[in-house]
Structure formats: structure tokens, C-alpha cells
Length: 258
Length: 258
DNA sequence: ATGTAAATGTTAAAGAATGTTTGTTTCATA
DNA sequence: TATGAAACAAACATTCTTTAACATTTACAT
Image 1 (cartoon, rainbow over the protein chains, first blue to last red):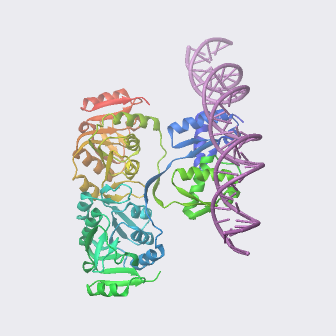
Image 2 (image 1 turned 90 degrees about the vertical axis):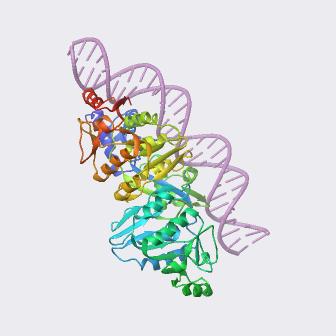
Image 3 (image 1 turned 90 degrees about the horizontal axis):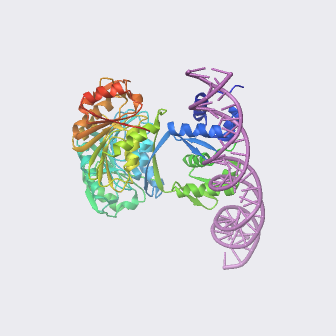
């Protein structure tokens, strides 16, 4: 077999990557019937031009770009309860609605349930929510602007607040870091508290999600009261006494079992 | 089955975790037909990159969460040229400045060079840029709000445009999908073109980056002219005749060699 | 044809990855 | 908590890969 000109061979090597994520030098040398040295030089040339990366014994594709916004969060804590709460909140969402979706692990569980949503618009300050919904066909994701908190995948600050003022949504769904027995809603971050407060203003109706461990705990920043909220969803571990008090504030309290 | 290079194997192991939360060493060793010791070393390598956590008999995903905004970049030519152009653009950036950094592969190369920046503020519609700079100590990242274009990690639309109006920056740095021989700047997306235009308005000075293959090609949307730009950086493959014309428009033309 | 440049092949020494052995640690459970 | 089975890590042996220098071939313009 006649040897191909080098450019053609390199193109063929390049094609390989659409079938496999990686190639081995030994294999390519056999296949094109050239020395391994030649394949090495081909790969070096391709590496400079395109998005492959040399490795020991071959090369891998780096074309798929993975943006990593990583953060440390205990997503596992009470996950069953959070899932059940999110499933209940899912019921509140109707096709065609515009949602304001807060940052947090519970709302992230809800986001996962929205991937099959129809004609939804989700407005969020959370990169995690945006990531979860980026490929959902029936959901348009609008990310609020703002400063990325270091080590935390969400946006806060004056820009975020300013962005929020542009929107009028049907429903705001939020998490909370603590719910006082008097119905005060707490966040552990002041900037987040401000954003949450504005989110409720921008939506016709609002809904707060918090598993029972949050009830009776407080945190740094208060962002309002359950009295300003339409629906509060928690799990059945919540003390009945507290729930009665919340109901008196005018909020509709829903409990779910995990 | 042919053994893949070790990096490829590690990537495949890593992908396992999206299907299952944990994997066992014995299973992996069987599957890839290598010794368990090799799998242990793979896992140790992955652990060092903080993707996973070793356990007895296997590994699990670490609690650090990774948000993947993945997209398949169009096959890229001329990476070396883009790097060289980005390196030249890096020279324009001084400590303390506020930058508007556009979306695109060339500007992304520049972002990588800014990680050791001092006291910089980077305002960007690109999730890729934000991801690249999220851990840069001397750089504050402000993400513009907006709609996430499907399959493309950047923000556009009215929200983005509105956000841009909030800022006054020292320098705007942009890519381009085409540069007409008359100096017209082209983008392949109309929404991006609008954002780019506004970015230049919001900055005192502006700079456009484009490798020589872009010169003489046009695209869907025009977003202005090099006459409105302070600096144009390209590589030495650019036709001298075109560059002379650009200079006459009043833009400072810089060429670099890859 | 012939010289020149580019592409390819060859070799040997250095370097990486992998396998194997062995003794130690960890885990489940009796 | 004592014990056997499984998992682990260290050290070394083995195999495969890389690199760089140099030799050879090929392509092509003159």
C-alpha cells in the first residue's frame, strides 16, 4: 500500500477521535504502516493545531470542554427529604411559567425534576441550577449576573440585585438555611439574603423549601418572614407545634414524607 | 482489546462516576484488563486532582461538586497563533484595571494568562472565562447575566445588554468570527454582535483579536468596524495589503508570530 | 538527472507505566 | 475483640514509550 501524504494521514488520525476518545500510537503505526516515530510527529503536529493532547502511548481528545465550577457542599445530607420536598414543589410548576429559582441543594434537586418541563423559563443566580438545566429542551435558562462567590457556585451582589429588577415571574422558589420558630427566614450569607428578598418581590407567588432540620435554627442574615410567603414545604419530621404557628402567619404549610 | 493510553483509561474511569456513585477496583481491573495495582495508581492520580475519593476496595465521587457546562467546540485551527495573539494582548493589561472580556477561544486563551493577574476585575459574558478565572486570587470575576445559548457556554440577550450598561471598564478585549477587508467586524451570532458592540461602548479602550484566517471572511452579523477599535492583534500570516488598509482606518495593528 | 528540503526510519539510552511479590493494614463478622 | 479474608502499599522486575541524534528515503524544482 502506498503511503499517504502526511497531511492526509494526520486528517485521518484526527477523524479517529470522533469514534474513540483516545488512540494508541502502536495501533496507528500498524494501521498506516509507518513507524511509531512518524505517528508521534503527527500527533505533536496535531496537538499544536487542534484540541488533542499527547499522552503516554497515544493521545486523547480535549475538544469537549468541561467547565468546572467546583464547590464543597454536603449535597448528601438529608437527601431523601430534600428530594421529596422538591417533588412536592414540582407540582406547583405549570407549563409556560416563569420561575425564579434560588441557589441551594434543595432547589437543585428541584431543578433536576424540571428537565422535562414544558415551555418554562427559569431565572436563577445559581450556576449549579444553570448547569443542570443547560440541555433541557423545554426550559430556557436565564442566569442572573453578578460576582461569583469564591468557592460557591452562585452569583450575588449589586449586579444580581439590579438584574432581578428586570424580571416579573410567576413563582419564586427558595431554600433557606434556617427557619425561626416565629417564621423568620434565615440565610447564612448576607448577600444571598438580599437576593432572596428581592426574588420574592419580583414574583407573583413564592414558595420556601426547607427540611425539618432547618426549623428552629437561625443563621447570620434574616431575609423576611414566612408571613410574606405563599407556600412552605417541609418534611414530616417537623414539629407540629411550629407548623401550627406558621399556618397562623398565613402561609400554606405542606409536609411530605421522604 | 487494545490497551488505551493511561490517560484515556483514567478519563473513562472518571466517566464511570456519572453512571454510578462508586466503583470497585476489582471490577475496573477486569474491565480494562490491567492489574489491580494499576487501577489503584489510576485512582490515586484522580484523587490528586480532587475528582474522587479513595475508599476501601474502590472509590466514590468526592463531595466537591463539579458543574459541567460542556460543549463541543468547533474543530479548531491555529491554536498556536491564538496563543501567541493572546500573549500579546496580555501585555495590554495593567494591574488594577477593569477588563471586559468577550467570549471565544482566543479570549479564553487570554483568560488563562490572566490567572496571575494583580488586582484585576474581569467582567465577562463567558462561562468558560469565569470558570478559568474562578480561583485566580488577584482577579475578581463578574459574570454578566443573560440567556445561556444552547450548546454554547456564554450569555447573551437583553439581560446581558442591560447588565453591560452598569459598567465602565478600562479595556474591552474581543474576538471576532470574521474581519472584512474594509475593516468590518463580523460575528456568527446576532446576539453576540450586539453584546460586543456594547462592550466597546462601555470601555475606554478596545482591542480585537483575530488570527489571520479570519481576515477576508465574513459572517452573519456585523458589529462595527476596526475604525472604532484601538488595537487589532493578529498573526503574521495576515496579508500585508489588508493590514495597511486597517492601519489607515486609525487602528493600531500588531502582528505576532506563533 | 541532480541537489535540496522535507518526511520518514533507525537506534540506543532514558524514562514511564505496569506487573509481581511480599508484608502490612483494614474490614466484616463470628 | 479476635480472626480470616480481602485490600493495600512498597519495592523491585519487566515491558513498553519517549526522546534525540543521525541515517535514509522521498518529493520536487531546477
